[in-house]
Image 1 (tube, rainbow, N blue to C red):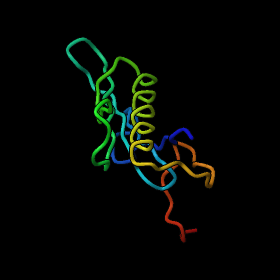
Image 2: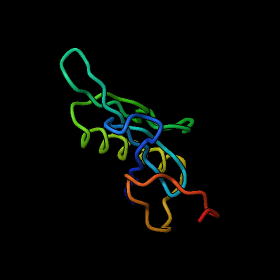
Image 3: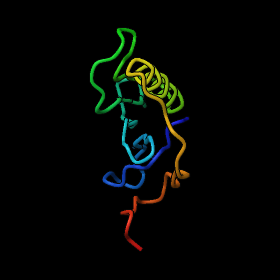
Image 4: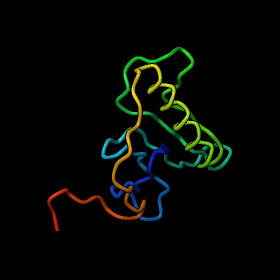
Length: 105
């Protein structure tokens, strides 16, 4: 199951900064920064401990799509190593929608 995008609302509105969610669990982050050669995208898995040797927990790439693919690939490597799997759940919210507390209306 692909990880869902949720915009980081703690950053300026025009920033490219997203959390990647597995259900309600925040498993990673992708954000853009200006490097010496222009824009670059940093990605990181958060809260995973251990893992196979070939797994990476962070990286810097040229595009958002590359960052999203790398994070997804390494999340799947960790899930396989940990002998876990994604379960179906409620549909993810829009990436531009602020998070809601479960009991708030």
